[in-house]
Length: 194
Image (cartoon, rainbow, N blue to C red; front, side, top):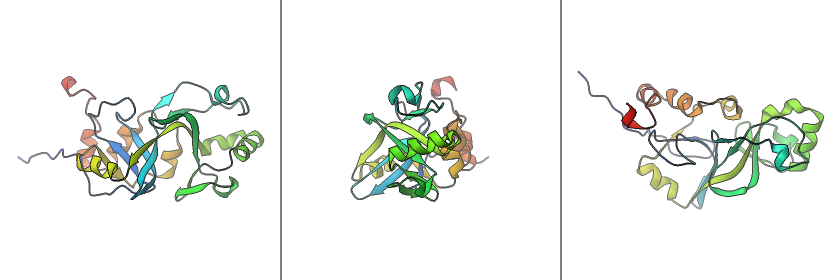
C-alpha cells in the first residue's frame, strides 16, 4: 500500500502569463476556487484577474456606449472594483495593448475596442472583462506560495483563458495538473461534506 500525496504544491514559479489556482479549501469571496491570470509579476509586485468569479450584469448597463452584446463580466479581484479592465486576443488591432502571453493582451484603446465590436459583434469572443483586479505587494505572492495557498500552472491554452462559458474552470485546470491534482479537483469545498 502506498501513501497518497495530497501536498498542494508544484515546482512552478509564478510568472507573467501563468495561471494561479487557489488551494481547494480557501474560503474567500474573491479567491475561493479561483483561477487567476497573472498579468504581471516582478520584484515590485504582481497583479492579475480572477477568471471565474462572474457577476450578473450586462456591460452596456455599466457603459451605455458599449454595444448591446451579451457578455459576462468577472470580478477580477478586490482592488479598484469600480473600474473596468479587459484582456483580449485581438493583438495590434487595439492600440496601446500590452502582451501578457502569446496571443493574450491587456487593455489598450477602449474607444477602438468599442468601434471594432460595433463593426463585428462576433469579436466579443476575443475579449474578457473584469471589474477590479487582484494585486500583491513585493514578495507577498511568493509568501503565499510558501504557505501553499496557490499553485502556478503553465499548461492551459489561450482558448480556455478566453472562454467565459466554462463554469467549472478551477476544477478543469486542477484536473489537468496530474493525478493528485485531479483527485483534489473533486474535493468538496467544505471538507466536512467528504
